[in-house]
Length: 182
Figure 1 (tube, one colour):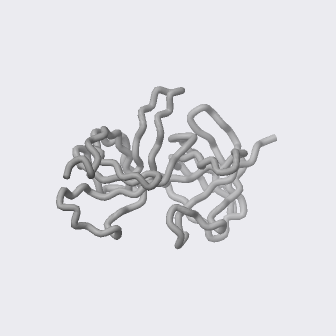
Figure 2: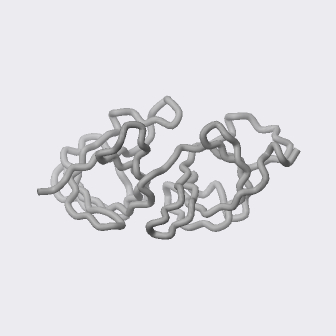
């Protein structure tokens, strides 16, 4: 008997850092390992998924707990309105952030901020904290302002870990906060 897992794909909500319920899909777990799963999605009508996209995984979790994040690694059409796909778990937890390139003059507006995800350190597999940002907009050595839990942080992107058509993932180091630099 296979387990079921909820998957959220796409972010079409008009509310910041939320996903509409219409983007919640129930998938059957066909196979599972420590690093990922093979899922089956039946009765696909208007849903779209692509290799390289991020998805949020909602398993049985405590109220208020953030979803896990995975990347779609492969897709296979297995019948009319049915797709199997492989996912790689990036982190069991992820937190919404906003980011922009750091400007010492700080003349940019809030509209310059883009959405991203903070991936906390994953000690079980010795994975340092990282950031998931929009694809192709940032590169190693960029200095960014990041807002997490209403607090602004100044960070330097140290190394690009992965870039797909949907996202770029970076290791980072902390710098002085923007307030400390003035």
